[in-house]
Structures are given as C-alpha cells and as structure tokens.
Length: 400
Ligand SMILES: Cc1cc2nc3c(=O)[nH]c(=O)nc-3n(C[C@H](O)[C@H](O)[C@H](O)COP(=O)(O)OP(=O)(O)OC[C@H]3O[C@@H](n4cnc5c(N)ncnc54)[C@H](O)[C@@H]3O)c2cc1C
Image (cartoon, rainbow, N blue to C red; front, side):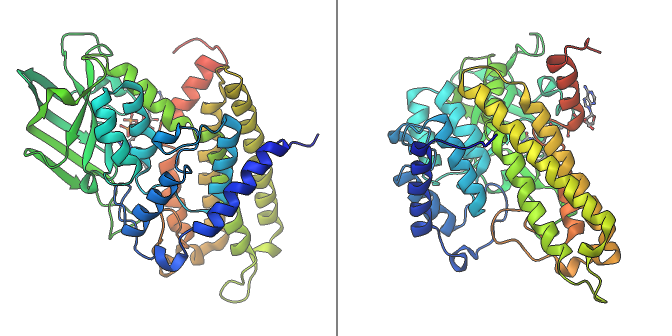
C-alpha cells in the first residue's frame, strides 16, 4: 500500500513551500533567544505577523482571522511542512493554539475583537492558568476563588506550573465562582491582565536551564477583574476547559511523530560522530537495534496519527489521541535515556549544551534531552492519566 495525498493537496504543499522558502527569517535573524513560552522576540513578532498577513498563520481559519479556509487535509500538510522547517509559527503557543481558539468559541464579539486579533498578530502574549498545587490531573479540584462584587470579580488563590506567566500580558484563568456547587459546576474563566495590582509571579528554576525559567507560581491577592472579562457563562468554565484542551490536542496527529523523527535525526548524527577516543556508537550492534526499534515505533506513530486524523476528518470521534500522546512521549523519554546510557560519561557533558536560539528542547547535551523528555509525559495529561483513559474509554474496562 502506498499512502499519498492527492494532486490538489500536493499543489497546496508546493505553494506553501515556495512561500516559506521566500519568507522564512534566516537563522542569523533568529539569534535573539526565546526566554519563555510567552516571550516573543522582535524577529518572532515580525515572522508571526507576516504569516498572519499572508493567510499562513492558521490556514484552517477564515481570512479575517489570518487563515484561508484550508481543508483539514491541507492543515495536516501545513503542520508536516512546519515540522520539516523546524521553525515555530508562534513563540507563544498557548496563546495561538489554545487561548485564541477558545475565545473564538466562547467569547463575546468584543472579546474576540479585543484579544483574538492582537494575539494572532503577536501583539500580546498569554499564559494559561489551569493547574494549582492540588489541582493538576484533577483540574476540577481547583480552588482559586473569584467573587462577583458589582461590576468586578475579586480573585484570590494560587496557580502553579504556569508557563510564561512572568512574560505574558494576560492570563486565561480558571477560577471557582460557586464553592457550593458540585466540583465541575462552579468553575468560570476570566481574562486577567497580568499587570493588575495583587498578582505576584514567582519563576520556578528548572534543572535543564539555570538562566531562564518557563514555569511560575502565580499568586492572586484581592485582584480586581472587570466582570466583562468573564469568558462564556458564569459557572460554565468546565465546558470551556474541555474545548481548550481539545484545541491543545488538535496538533497531536502529526506532531508526536514529527517531533520524534527530529530526535531520531539527532540520534543518527550522534551515532555517526566520533566520540572522544574515536568510538562510534553506530558500530555498537545493541545500539543499532535500539535505533531501528525506535524508527519502527515512530513509523507506527505516524500511521496511527494518520488513522486518527482520517477519522476526525470524516467527522468521527477518534480514540487515538491518548494512545499517540502516551506512545510518543514515552518513546522520546526512553530513547533519550538509551542514548545517554550508550554515551556513558560523554552524555553528561553539559559543555555541549548550547543555548537554543528558537524554542526549547534544541539542546545538544543528551542529559538535557533526557531531563526535558519528562515534560512531554506530564504536560497535557500525564502518562498514568492517558493509561486510565485508554483503559476506560478505549478498551471499555471498568472504572477503578
Ligand atoms: C512542560 C509543562 C508545561 C505546563 N504548562 C502549564 C501551563 O501553562 N498552565 C497550567 O495550568 N499547567 C501547566 N502544566 C501543568 C500540567 O498541566 C500538570 O503538571 C499536569 O496536569 C499534572 O498535574 P500535577 O503536576 O499536579 O500532578 P498530579 O495530578 O498531582 O499527579 C502526580 C502523579 O500522580 C499521578 N496521578 C494523578 N492522578 C492519577 C490517577 N487518577 N490515576 C493514576 N495516577 C494518577 C500522575 O500521573 C502523576 O504521576 C505544565 C506542565 C508541564 C510538564
């Protein structure tokens, strides 16, 4: 069987490639480092704005929102090409891929005009305030309170693991507005201006990067938020959360495989580059088997992604998401460990950790790759939670 796209879709790919080749900022221009997932350096602002102006930022959306009404299949091709180029569309992924579409789904017309367009044009950046110290996997257990007093909410509480909070302009924040309602019923969503008095962001140092932190603890003390910043209906934030997480999962079809392919390319480079003393990992039979197995698993991931996507494009509700997320993230973590172990002491050499110029996770040091690889098994639902979902919703096993 030969899997391929039709000629019309390939024509779309050619047009996209030609545009990208002509407009992609050269690496010399991309020198300013991204400090967090809400820090947008000037070159990235210009790049995102150019994508927006030319209908290549979110091709599946209508032209007035930076798109070109691309079909689902064309969007798949778009993400394949972006992955091949290795340049992000946006340096504030949560703003572009989760929050802007959530405001389009649930926001008022005024909120759409005020927040969505500036987000697409990279004029403002966002953080996502979901997790709390006792509400991560069990998000519905969140306790940050928002009380409505006249025309404003007063917010008190704490978020944690808030990526980019210290560099963001706004927080898309999940708060408890009815403490007497059942857990899922009393939640609402507020847009909070991060410059409002009473907000303290405290970056959390990371093992992988001593200079820059992405995560934060965020404390809210009597923070006043205009009532008009409520997104969706009062106490109906759980539906917004479901929609936001679905947007987050939207790119999983292809990204799990392409992300793993990029790492495999690095593995091959590492294996074919002589180590101190002249040893080549590529000469090690056990290591070659490890790499071959990882390659086969990556191909399986890709086909699984295409199968899930084909169901999605036909309007079905595919169950492949959890399997893809679990397999992809665990494969990358296992591979990073295998390479680190095969390298031995050389794999611990942090002097080979060059600061990435674009995005994070571009590190040269395998130790850093391995440490970073845990993030994928936690963010967006941990591996244990994915296993629960697969057991209960895919395989139909009884709930524990
Ligand atoms: C890279 C990255 C970026 C992130 N960015 C953000 C962000 O911008 N905004 C935000 O709000 N959050 C963010 N998070 C937080 C993330 O959503 C949470 O870490 C995640 O939901 C898990 O929650 P937790 O850390 O509280 O762990 P917990 O839920 O406390 O889980 C602890 C352990 O218990 C296990 N466990 C929990 N419940 C069950 C169960 N029912 N069955 C079996 N095992 C279980 C988990 O798998 C885990 O191993 C980010 C996390 C990462 C890694």
